[in-house]
Length: 404
Ligand SMILES: Nc1ncnc2c1ncn2[C@@H]1O[C@H](COP(=O)(O)OP(=O)(O)OP(=O)(O)O)[C@@H](O)[C@H]1O
Image 1 (cartoon, rainbow, N blue to C red):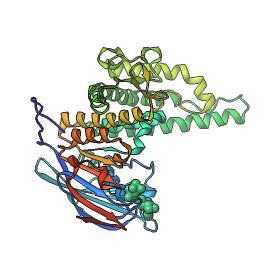
Image 2 (image 1 turned 90 degrees about the horizontal axis):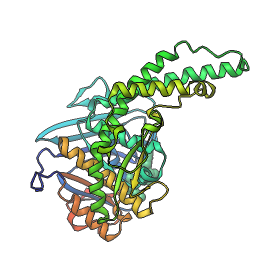
Image 3 (image 1 turned 90 degrees about the vertical axis):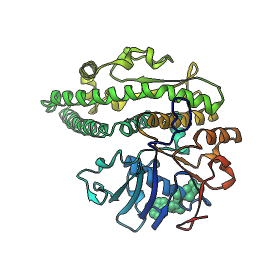
Image 4 (image 1 turned 180 degrees about the vertical axis):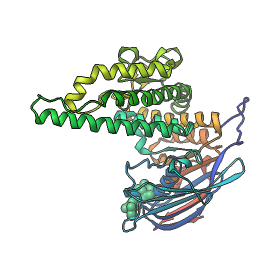
C-alpha cells in the first residue's frame, strides 16, 4: 500500500486487473473473470486451478511463471498454444494486454489489440508482486533464485533492463559456445592445440559492457530495496531480527564485503559502470586459462549471489523455517513498497500463503496489505484468509471460476 507523507493510505496511481481471460492455459480450456479493485479471494479445493489463474496474471507482468522455467507446461495438455488476455486499469486508463504462448517459439503480444514488435514491449504495462510458497527458495535455494528475484525487480522498476539482461545472456551463450568448442579441440588434440580463440577478446568486451550495466542496476536496486525489506521484516516478525542485503560478486574479489553493514555505508554499492566494466575485464583475464580448460565462463553477474543477512548470520543455512518464511515475505513486501514508492502501486498476489502462516503472522500480513489497490489471494480454505482481506470472493472448481 502506498502512503502519503502523513502515512495515510493513498490509492492514487494504483493498478488493478479488471478482467482476465484464458484460453488453453494450464487446466483451463476457456475462462473469463471480472475482478474488483481491493481484495479478491479465490477459494477451492487443491488442484482446481487457483494458482493457474494468478500465475497467468504474473506471466503478463514478467513474461515468466513463478513455478516453471519453460513455457511448455503453461499450455493445456493436448493444445498447441495458450492465450492470456488481461485488461489492466492504471490511472483510470485501461490497457488490454494479450499474449499468445507457443512453446519453443517467441511469444506473440498485442497491446490494445495492436501487435507489438517484441513481446518484452509489454513489460511495464502491468506490474505485479507475487508471493508464493516457492519463495522460500529465495532464502534457502541456489544463487540463481536470488539473481532472478533481483533481475525481475530491476525489470519491473525499469523495463529497459529486460534488454540489458537479454544482451548479457546472448553474449554469455556465444562466449560459452566459443570456449566449449576450444575446450573440445584442446581435448581432441591432447593439449597440443588451444582451439580457435581469436574472437575471445571481443566477447570479453561485450560481456564486460553488458555485465557492468546489469551489475550496476542490481546494486542500485538492492540499495533502494534494503530499507523496505528491513521495515517489512520488522513488521512481519514483530521486531524479531534485523535484515541486511549484501551482494557477493564473482568479479570484485575482496572488494565486495560479505558483512552485514547497511548498503549505504558499503563502497561496493556505489560503483560506476566504467569501474565495474574494468572489474569484469580483469576478472575475465584472471580466469582465462581456467575458462579455456573448462570450456565455460566462470566469472560475471551470472555467477553472483545476494547474501541475505539476519542479524549477524546469513539467513541461508541458519534461519529457522519461520524466519525463512518471514524473510521471503519481507523481500516481496519490500519489493511491493519500493515499486509503490517510485511508480504507482503494483498488483499484489498472495498465492497459497495463509495456510503456511500462524494466526499472528496472518493478521499482521492482512493489516499490512489490506488497503492495497488490488490484492489477489488464493486459499484452499476460506477461513484461513483474515477478515481484513475478505473482498470479492470466487469459487474455483473443475475449470470454472464463479463469483460468490
Ligand atoms: N498444462 C496443463 N494441462 C492440463 N492441466 C494442467 C496443466 N498444468 C497444470 N494442470 C493441472 O492444473 C491443476 C493445478 O492447478 P493449480 O496449481 O492452479 O491448483 P490450485 O487450485 O492452486 O491447488 P492447490 O490448492 O493444491 O495449490 C492440476 O490438476 C494440474 O494437473
